[in-house]
Length: 459
Image (cartoon, rainbow, N blue to C red; front, side, top):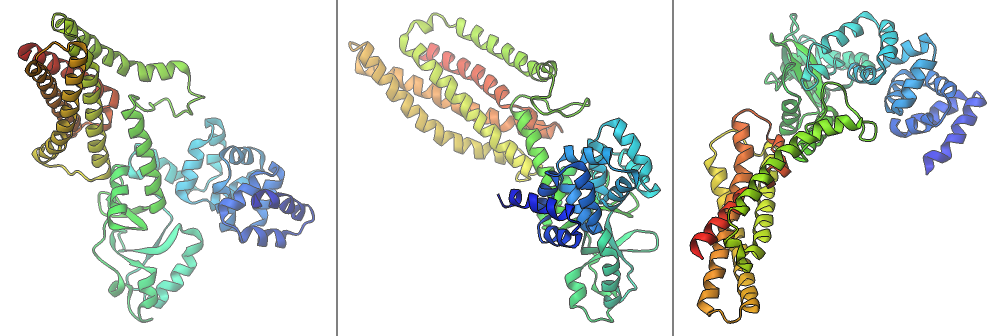
């Protein structure tokens, strides 16, 4: 609400030429709030506001502008203003921004960049989108190991306006190899004449530029880092991954895993789309294969049930079949989701499968016991109501068999749901591709088979 009230005030200050007051108002805000106000202005007004701001604030405000407003600005503002805005942006933000633009617009903007920025863009294109080298930031602070603590602080004061973070500074040798890092806190607490070499920590946790983005996110989380250095094959420092990048990676991976678990295959090489913008044929092409595969399982399941038509003439048996199948599918889905979540979060490391099998057997066994009692009670009551003339021992026998079938099906469904993602990981596949519908369909097939075989043999 407050933001909307400030929009007329900002516009009035701009029209009256009170640029100092305008700067004061926007500098007191978080760049996100300032960008929300600026986004509500006309393109000409946005250009005037950005031109009036200090370089670092201009960069931050532009970064948080709505993507549509950003594109309108770079296509409508003059070459010099666009060159200035692109020049102030951090390397990873600039690359991400240019990637979002239409190819024709991007081709007009890239020549405006200095040669170092163009080389940075070309280097990023040599990596896949899920590799660290495609999104790392090259705006990191570097210190010489021979500097004193006082000289290092002065050097950081010089570098700070153009760096993404200076809390961690990286120490490199003449060949550019990473030999240590030092925090700003350690520099401040050190004596003025202490060399950086004595203050720095030489045991550096780093990641290769070719590494998967999930590996970088896990390292940042596990070591509680603000930034993670990225090195090449020779150990030379080439960039950093910051904690906000890690948050974006986790969110992106969670979205991708959700799509896969829902039976989708994710976006392909043709580009990313919002749901309403994506063509219908693309949705069909992505979702139909999974559904067709599941249909095959359901056809096989129906064939199994048809093969037991004689046994299905017993009302209590056919009445309990939907309950048995639905319960097993739910148990399998729960087990699969829990294991996939543990695999994605790093809670399950590569190792023997037996500990996970034993854990799921115990959990599923207790759940199956409760469900078997419910199935036995239900079968007992239904049989007494429908066939009250049946002997009690006969009813107990029927209930016991159905309860045993429920017990066997729940155990098999739980093991199926837990083991499938683990086996896929062992085979170096993606566990999230084992979607919830697929586990449910397989559990239905095995459940129907177990149930019908047991009741046919024992009743």
